[in-house]
Length: 335
Image (cartoon, rainbow, N blue to C red; front, side, top):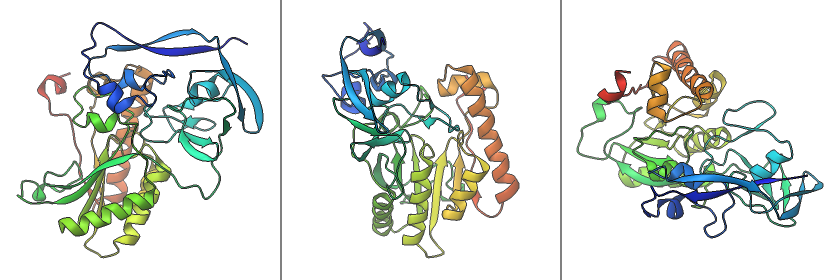
C-alpha cells in the first residue's frame, strides 16, 4: 500500500517573523505536515507539498497493528486507514474544527493519554484508541486570564465604557474560521501551550473574579464552542464554584456550531449571557469576513449561526442576556 505525506514549505512571501514556529508548529525541526503553520501564517507564505512516503512505522489502532507513514500526524494516519474527520460535529466522524491543536475536539487516546490527533506526530509502537473512555476529562488550550475593561459581544452595553474592570475573561484557543482581520490571532492559532481541564479553568476564573471584584466571568476565543464536552463541563463547574445570584457566566461565540440541544445544555449548566458574533447575512459577505474558501462549508456555518440566534431569541429572550454582534467594517458590509 502506498502512503502519502505532507511537508510544509515556505514561499518568497515569508518575512521570517517567527510566528509559525513560536505559536503554531508543534514539532519544529521535524515536520509532520499538520498544516498548523500554513493556517497561522499572517502572510500566507506557507504551503503543504504532498509527496510519497518512503518510511513507515507500525502503530496499534483500536487494538490492531497497522503500518502507517512516518512523519505524519495521527489524524492523517487515521484518515489513510479509513477513519473520517469533519469540521462539523457529524455522526460517524471525529470532529476536527480548528486544525492547529488548540481546541482538542479531535483528541484521541494516545498511549493512555488524551492528545490532539491533528498535530500529534505518529511514532513507532504508538497505541491509539479513537474512543475516549468514561471518566477521562476533556482538555483544551485556554489562556489570557485577565480583568477586562472592554467586554465582549455578550457584555451589556451599559457596562461598556466604564473606567474599571467589568469582567474576568479568558480565551479558548483554536477557531473554525479564518478571519483575516482577527484581533486574537495568537489565540486562534495557538497550539503549543499546556491544556486545561474544565476544573482547572473554572478554579482559575473563580480566583480571578475574586481578585478583580466583578460578577461577570467571560470566555471568548478563538472560538469557545469548538469542544462541546469541555465547554459544558467548564460552565457547569464555574456555576458550582460561583453559586451566588450575582454571578454571570458569559460565552462569546461565532454561533456557527451551536444547535438547540447545545444551547439548552449550556444554559442548563449555568450560562447566563451569550454573545453570538455573526459574520454576515449573505454568503459572499460571510466568506469575505471569515476567510473560508469552501463554499459548501461556509453556507452550512452561516445558516447554522442564524438558526442558533433565532432559537435563542424564540426560547430564551428575557431569560438570559443575548448580545448580537455584526460586521462593522464598511468595506465588508456593503457586499
